[in-house]
Amino acid sequence: MKLLHLDSSILGDSSVSRVMSEAVVEQLRRTSGPLEITYRDLASDPLPHVTLPRLATGDAGVVLDQFLSADIIVIGAPMYNFGIPTQLKAWFDHVLISGKTFRYGENGPEGLASQKKVIVALSRGNIYSGDSPAAASEHAEHHIRTLLGFIGIADPIFVIAEGVAFGPEEREAAMAKAMGQISELRPLPLAA
Image (tube, rainbow, N blue to C red):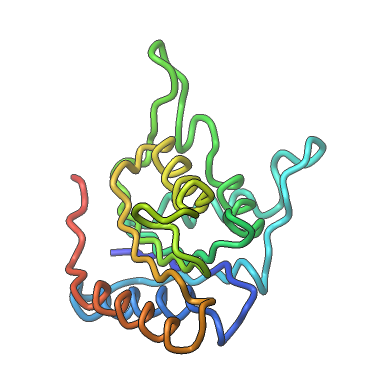
């Protein structure tokens, strides 16, 4: 089984999403048997942003092939300024390709990557879940769900640590809760 592990935080070793995504990969390694893992650090080795003169960047083929060959994708995603990092958005721009990961048919867009399993390790400084006053400002999880859904991945798993900017105790509690969820992850059934 092939696993693609992506990190997008600019915070290096102090990143909550990086710690979480690595824990997800380790949990899957323990419970899923042999994994062929490809790792891509989108912060230290960012992809170029797509522009009109550069719709297909030099990295496009490699990035798309990494995605298409993976059975499982683990994404470490912090929420910056209410959304996803531009490095992660650039990766999605290299992966959402008409005729490869989606197509337009008589009934509109159809995702072509529905057989993939995705786990997103998402960190947020504030509390955005439930009836939080900030809930309407959460655009990272929603954006990722929309992008994945567009290519046919309707049921990504999100492990979320939120409130990590409130202080050391709150950060530790949020990470402990997320690590508890990660420890319960079991092998992901793949579509035939």
